[in-house]
Image (tube, rainbow, N blue to C red):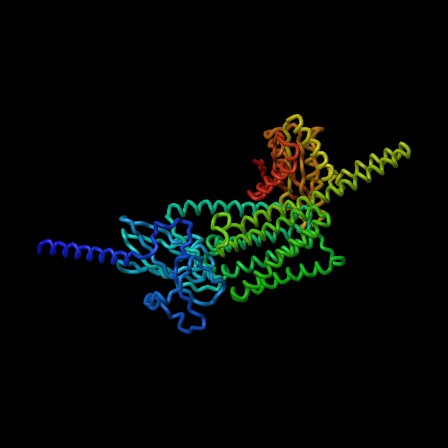
Length: 605
C-alpha cells in the first residue's frame, strides 16, 4: 500500500514538473509564429505601440533600455488595424515578438513597405543572447541601407525554437504608417522583380509619350504639347520619388532633395496640368473668364508651392499640396465633363484621363486605410491610373490634331467645290488657270517639292493600294543634321539655301514616276517608295545620305558639308488603318539615328 501511495505521489510530481516546464517554454515562446503568416500579410495589426509626444522634452532620450522595461499595460495594441497615425511629429515605438516554433533554423526578410519614413531604428532582441540594431530612413543615404532596395528590408535569422523581440522607433515628417510583412527571401525577390517589371512598363510608356509629343511640339509648335510633356514628366518623377526609385537610382546621397522632390513634382503636375487644360480645351479668357481665372489660380498655387518646397520643410508643404492637388484633379474632371457636354469630342479623352488618375489615388488611399485588400493592383493604383491618364491625354492630343486636320480638309474640299462650280461657268482659259492654282497649292514655295498636305493625301492612297494588292511599301523620313546651327551661325537665308540644295539632290536621285519626294516641315523631308522592299529602301536611303554628305554647298564663298539622318521602314500593310503607325515607326527610327550619332540610316523594326 505504501509503495502504491509513493508511486502515485511520484507520478503527480512528474506531471506537475512536466506542466511547469511546458508552461515555462510556452512563456518563452509567446509571440507570433513566423510560419503562421503569409508573405503579403500585414504584421502591423499585431504590434503594440507607445506614442511619446513631441512636447515631451525627454522623448528623444528614451532608448531601448528604457522602453524594454515598460510594463505590458503601458503598450497599446493595434486591435486588428494597420499602423496608420497620419501626420504627426510625435515619436512612436512599436514592439512585436516573433517565434520560430520549428525544429530547424529559418531566415526571413522583414519589409517596411512605406519608403518615405524619415528615421527608423530597428532593434532585434533575442531570447538567447545579444541584440542587433539597424538605422534606416530616407533621411539617411541610400547606400547605408543593410539591403539595397527601395523598400526598407531587415534580415532576420532564427535558430530552432528561437524567439526574438522587435522594437522599432519611428520619427518622421511624413504620414506615420508602418506596413510590416515577413517574407521568404527567395519569394520576396521574385515578387519584387515582377513589380519592378511593372514599374519599367509604366516609365517606358511615359518616356515614349514624352519623346513622341516633343517631336509633335517641334512640328506644330503648339504650347499644349509642351505643357503635356511637362505634366507627365512631373507625374512620372513624382511616382518614382514616392516609390524611392529616384532615391535608389538617381540621387542616393541627396536626402534633402529626396524629401522635397515628392511635393515639388506633385505641384508641378498641378501647375502644368492646369496650363495644359486652358490650352487644350481653349478656355476663353473673355466668355469663360471665371473658369479661366479659377484654373489659373490653382495652377499658380501649384507653382508657388513648388517654389516653397525648395525652402520650407516637408511637413509644412505636404498638406496644402495634397489639398491643392485633389481640388485641381476634381476641377479638371468637371471642366472636361462640361466641355464634353458642349460637344467637344477631344474632351471625352481628357475627362476619362483625369478621372482615371483620381480613381487610382482613391483606391490607393482606401488601401492605406485598410478599406481595400492589399495586392498589386491596389498598391499601384495611382501608377495604373496615371498610366491610363498619360495614354488617354496623348490620344486626346492626337484626336484634336486629327479634328483640326479634318476641319481644314473639309474647308479645303468645300472651297474646291465652289471653285469647280465657278470653273464650270467660266471659259477654258479660267479652267487652265484653276489647274495651275491647284498645282501651286501642292508645291512648297521654298523648295519646289510637294508639300505636306499633298504628301498626306498621296500617302493615304498609296497605302490603301499597297494594302489592297499586298505589295511592299517603303517610307523614308529625312532630317538635316544640326540645321539650327546653320541658321544661328549663317542666318536664315543660308538655311533656306541649304534646304533648296538638299531638295535638288533629293529630286535628282528619286526619279521613278511613282515615287514621291516632299517637304514635311522645317528641315524634314519624306520619300515615298511604292512597290519597294526593305533592301531597296535601304539602298536608296544610303545613296541619298552618301550623296548629300559628299556634296559641298557654297554659301557666301563658305563651303558647308551637310549630313542627314534617315529613318526608314518597309512593310506590306496588314490593315488599312495603320498608315499613321507606319509613319510613327519611321519617325522613331529617325530619332534613333539622331541619337546614335546622326549621318546614318536606321531601319524601323
